[in-house]
Length: 99
Image 1 (spheres, helix red, strand yellow):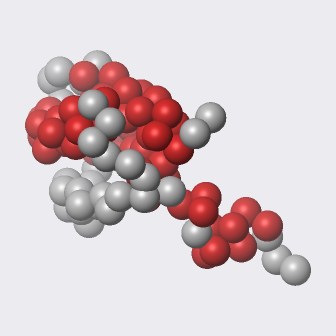
Image 2 (tube, helix red, strand yellow; image 1 turned 90 degrees about the horizontal axis):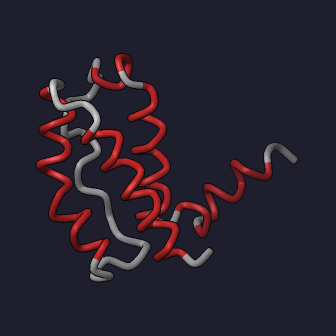
Image 3 (cartoon, one colour; image 1 turned 180 degrees about the vertical axis):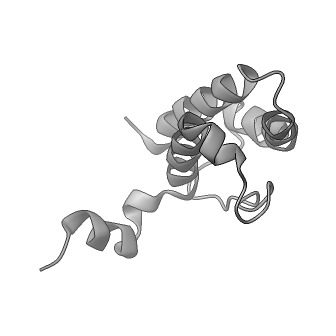
């Protein structure tokens, strides 16, 4: 799967999870903040690697992620695809493990 398709898939997955939490104010805020980025990804305007500007949108230690670990995992996968972590030497050394 190419990087743009992977990014589109991860963006859709995160968007669906956030949409499925209509009563959660944090999810609604993230969805509102990320909507323009999601739209640009869907239309092919964003190509990885691209910086993720919302790392601390909910604050440094947001309880949202404790309440919704599936959102945490989906956002991490999305950021990885967006910033193209697999192509980064630091990521490759983590995946390879200790020598």
